[in-house]
Image (tube, rainbow, N blue to C red; front, side, top):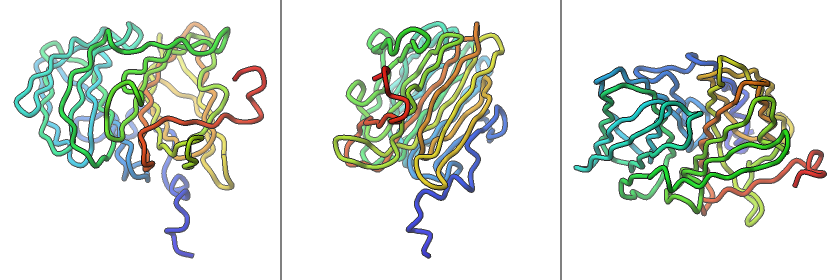
Length: 280
């Protein structure tokens, strides 16, 4: 049988849980590109810059958002200089960010040093470079009780324009469950569900741990139960993902990077039917 007819067998050849440091490459402590993940669009890099250091990035066929995790930086692109104030940590609140287009050469420089996420997606259109102000990031309170969490929709579909890239941050208080009910977005069903490849990147307050579940949505599909720590990433090529569980007294942060082949840039999800009673 031609492999082309089995588009979802890639995860069997690619690890889904990438412990901190296990997917480093060059200057990046985390480097996930479509080839590394075994899919088509989504990418994520984490860059640690020493004080006074600079980094040159060729964006290639992908659009990128430079998102400060710790510290601030300047982003130079096409004769523009975008100054990012950044933040002390991911738990300190929303941050400003920079969108940079495909087919560009970008310089990232940090006087005081810091850690920066580069969320990317292979794309077709070349949009202008832009600054994303922190006060304009919509912050959503989702869920209640021990499922309450905060979603920072900085590059959600319908919030910030991009060609393919969708990215949000989630803060789950210690002891709470998020990514719940389990949901999926692994097939294109117009108006109901969009097909999106997703990367989770985690930071856990106070050197704590969290837990991430992916359960199969189809025979042989993605299946994972992982203990995650700061710097870890998890790939979601398909499947029901959730819950993401935070250790009591240790808040959990994750960055979600998503992109897919659909005709529209949209986040449409399907909840797991066994878990939705009382939660929808």
